[in-house]
Length: 212
Ligand SMILES: [Zn+2]
Image (cartoon, rainbow, N blue to C red; front, side):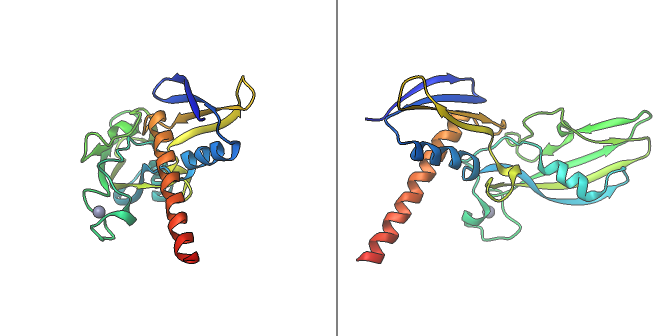
């Protein structure tokens, strides 16, 4: 019989003791936490102005790596969205605007300067440095975030750590997942199990029709 005990849950990290589960199943859940559970990240940036010292590409890459609050109930993966629009819609992408100008001293533009069209979908931290601006320099851009998966690019990994270790008692394992901040760690594990179950059902249907 499967027994799961919650050892720790801080919101950002969760540790579960798994009993009665084969190591390979537990590891499949761990891998789904990293590679299959979607997270929100900036994926497309339109520069209107950039007179900073950073090239557009470097700044766009930095924006992509900013962890963003994720809502899996309200947003769809672009490939699953019914809009069918390559530019996306309000259910599969979020627009951020950045409009920063260098003041008299050198100033640092941070993730907190990104203005989101959806106040619930915003950077996890407001203090991530993006670029420094000297007097007269400016950056003006539109950035589009969307859901994606860690197997496509590391910026879409919802967790920073997902490890499976031997538990205290024989035959038990401890699964520890630490979130990048976009989703609660417990939610990442639950979603991973849901997606693994869905994948197994798809296999079941395919095997069923292949052997019918
Ligand atoms: Zn859409």
